[in-house]
Every structure is written in C-alpha cells, then in structure tokens.
Image (cartoon, rainbow, N blue to C red; front, side):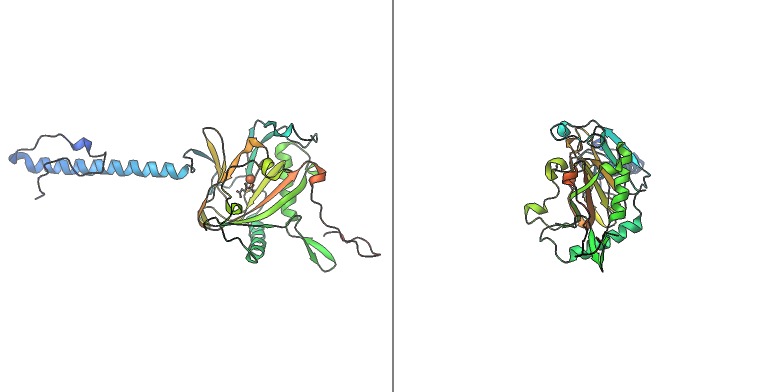
Length: 307
Ligand SMILES: O=C(O)CCC(=O)C(=O)O
Ligand SMILES: [Fe+2]
C-alpha cells in the first residue's frame, strides 16, 4: 500500500496546488480515495507537462528577444512573399536615381528564383574558397566581387546567372528596371559556425542597417546555401520591428531581399551548432558604386569579354 502523505504533495512546483488542503481520509474509504488521488495526481502532472511543452514550443518559435513571427519557415517552399514597409528617410540624404532609388520599400522571400541544385553548386565554390583560409572565430567571409574567373583566354563568371536572376526578382518586386541596378561591393560568401568570436569581425549577430554598414547598398539580397535545423541550429535572420520581429529561416536556394535602409534593421541569431553558408549580393542605384565585370584587352587584339 502506498504510504499515507501528510504534508503537501511533492508534485512539480506550482502545479500541486490543486491537491493541497484536502482533509485526510478515514480508514474505511481510504482505498477508493487513494485511487482518486492517484488519478488526480496523474491528471495534474499531465496538464503541467503539456503546459511546459507548449511554453517550450512557443519559445522555440520565438527569437532571442522572445517575440517573433515567422516570415519564411524552413519547411515552406515559397513562390514569393512580399511585405511592403514605409521607406525610411535614409534615401533622402543621398543622390536620388529616379526609377531606382527606393520609393517603394519592403522585403521579400522566394524559393522559386534559385534552384537547390544551383545553391549546391554555389555552396561548393564557397566551401572550396573558404577552405583556403577561415577565421579563428565563428564567422568567415570570401569576397569575390564580380565573380569573374580566368579560364584560358576568357573569363567565366562563378555566379553571374544567379546574380542576374536575383536582380530580376528585386526589380520586379520593387517595380523598377533591372538595368538600373548595379552590382556593388562587398558581395561575399559567408560561413558561420558556433566557434566563439575572436575579433569584432566574428560578431555577425549585431543588429545593423546595411546602408549604414556598407554605404553603397540600396537593395540587399541574401542567397542561403544551407538548411536551418538540418545543417545548423540558431542562425535565423531577424527583421527587427517594434513589438514583433520577423524571422527568415534559411533554406538552400532561398533568396531573401530587401531595401537596405533603416526600414529593414536586422540581425542574424547566433549559430548554436553546425555550419551556415550564405552569399550576400547587393545592388546600388549609383553607377559610380557599381562593380563591372572585368574585360581583358590583349595587346593589339580585340577585347576578351567575359563569357
Ligand atoms: O547572412 C545573413 O542572413 C545576413 C547577413 C547580413 O546581414 C549582411 O551581410 O549584412
Ligand atoms: Fe546585413
């Protein structure tokens, strides 16, 4: 027989209150009442476990600040999602290029611009390039500017097709002409893991505005090359807004793009495990800040244009 309990039951803290303060049973009815108590305990414990589970589940959906709405989930395959937000005043203090400098601001995510195969190919370039070096801390970059690579008498471009498709997607979403956009620097691969930061360059998680950080950016795009929760944990992208942050969960081939002003303040959550690859490709409206593909002019010969 189960020992008679004298004091308050030893259920989980805060969840045993329902059982407290009940008078002790008499000998004759002890057995059925004990059974009832046992079932009550099981029910209360079950309810507490469910509640704790729900709280934990809610927490995992939240970002490190505790409040987040998922703009693009890892298991969704998005044909395109766009949210317009009012433009900040950041564009007023710079030279305006009509038909390009943002008048419509916002952010978009699409899984239909770049295929997972293309992402795999770009990722292998990133892996090869970054294997030649790498930071002692958790964040490494490889900046390839235009992406041109000499092959024989010509150039090939490591990611021109990808860049052109992203450029088109941005132009369509913001209602501007693709030809008004110029690739700008830095355009770089990033590799992030959970190694502790060694220098300020490893501290990728700070909230920032790309226009402030990089100067020439008008439109930022990110092409993700690995999968959140399969390849790495943590590392979600967070648009920071008063009251409700919005997260983008990386997925290989997913393109996230947004106007680069302070209407799109953002940060990346710390990566807790695994390795996260991405490439940042940005565009400017100012041709003076654009990166042209290199053109080689051999002495006396016609120019060797990139293929
Ligand atoms: O990798 C990301 O998701 C974001 C990177 C970023 O914010 C940046 O390159 O400015
Ligand atoms: Fe950024």
